[in-house]
Amino acid sequence: MPISVSIVEDNDQLRATLAKVIGRAEGFQFVSDYGSAEDALLDLPKRSPEVVLMDINLPGMNGVECVRKLKGLLPATQVMMLTVYEDTENIFNALAAGASGYMLKRTPTKELLEAIREVRRGGSPMTTHIARLVVQSFQKPAAAPTPVRGGDLAELSEREQQVLDLLAQGLIYKEIAEKLGISYETVHTYIRRIYEKLQVRTRTEAVAKFLQR
Image (cartoon, rainbow, N blue to C red; front, side, top):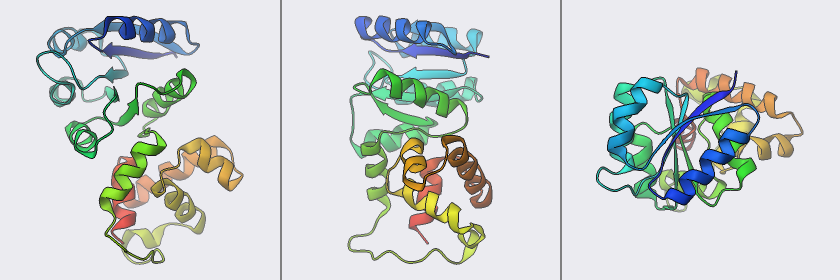
């Protein structure tokens, strides 16, 4: 089944471009687009897309607040931020509001489509740079790395620990697969097992647990 996608973006040209890209991509279905959070909140509950691409800087209500309200209306819909902002405040505000991913508008089309696939599979796609900012926000200055041991982390296999370590370094699934010489789907399987064992739902929560060991 194609992935149904809606867009919330106030830039008319970019919104039209994204709609065209998604509408033409194999395995995707463009559902609707909106120029404001208010319009999106009125109409999206009627359409229930699987994934919503959300800008932050919108006229009126901003994208972060829109995510918070939208998740209350459509808890099963995954929201991925698509923005120009790279600061940790916006990143964490968006994730705390309920966003499952955070990508930049300059992301190449191929990577953006893969990120949509990933968020629909239950992942939390982020650019390498964004993931690094998330990791750094949890790290203590001059903290020396220590072996994974104790608590829930002790339940991870050696390979799962390797995958989680690379995830904490900011690598995306494809890069982890290449680094370890395994398939993309195998990486996804490891991530799912890690989430289950650590009792977390997102990449951010898993990395935070790893860094707090």
